[in-house]
Length: 93
Image (cartoon, rainbow, N blue to C red; front, side):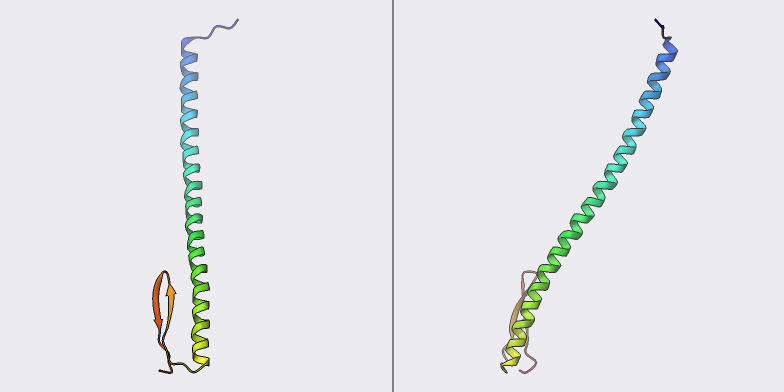
């Protein structure tokens, strides 16, 4: 059976602790980078969803304004944009 000397065990433990700390710091850096990217992707996805939903709202509003102008009405049209009412005045009035 091999006997280990105290200095060998101490040096081995020091090397093991150093390697574990380096791996932990590297893993934390990688995880932070990945989580940061995922957060940015989630925020951009939410922004895209808001823009898409507002696009649909604006298309519907444009249709209402066009219908109003086709029949010759001079009434203002109210549309919703980001949850707020926006009045579109008729160019005929």
